[in-house]
Image 1 (cartoon, each protein chain N blue to C red):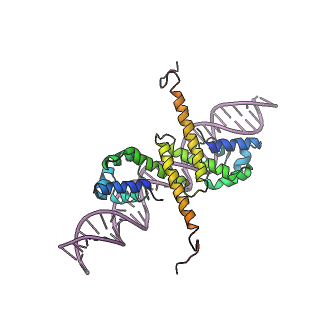
Image 2 (tube, helix red, strand yellow):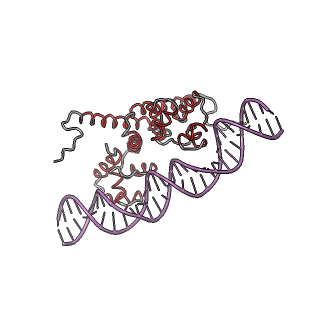
Image 3 (cartoon, chains in turn red, cyan, orange, blue):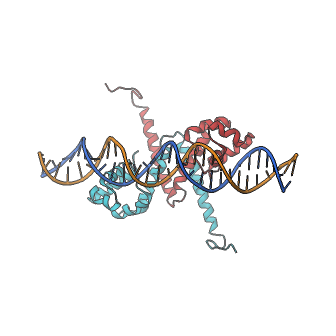
Length: 115
Length: 115
DNA sequence: TTATATTTGCCAATATTTGACAAGTCAATA
DNA sequence: TATTGACTTGTCAAATATTGGCAAATATAA
């Protein structure tokens, strides 16, 4: 498993018939860096994902999802307890989401009511 | 959601009636650092997990799982696409595992047969 | 108050990641 | 086979991020 994100970016770039040298400057980097990003040897900065999505006429959400998945994968890829850890993490995420969902039902959500 | 790992360590330490000052030196750190680790403000080094598990008479696997879950959570905690990313990452892990499972059925696994 | 346990803030030390450049490979083709 | 263009790789200093260690602050109990 290499970089899902990088592979997708390369595919998209080739579909648009763009060269590294055409795309890299738009991201303010040289071709070497973008090459490494596509090969998963470097990480694109999170805040550049919408930019590259725009350049490649792709879904920002799709690329962000792949980028995040790569980050997660980097944490657990050589871990025998990867699946267990994922389960625990998932539970934590859902609890967090449940909490903020509850907040919606509380009065004065988002107001600064500390009078 | 704070640090599952840190909270578990604190619970275990208190169950054993140990003070930070007793445990910290065994991990070659001062009480301030261990305090931060228990509160999730610092990360214990991965390779120290078996050590702290031994000190606290706990399961190394349990603590490793919580530690990894914390690392994963740190990546996605503020991401709206957290769940999607987790799904993709999980698929990647399972594919990887499936691959190494296949390897077991190949001949000469682990030998250096490049003659 | 004193003593003990823990926490917090700060910043230097260390570790990790990135950016930039040069040199390299590879394929097409003149 | 020399040249060109696209991409890749290696190196290393610079930028970032993380940690370690200390001192001071807080908290709680005696």
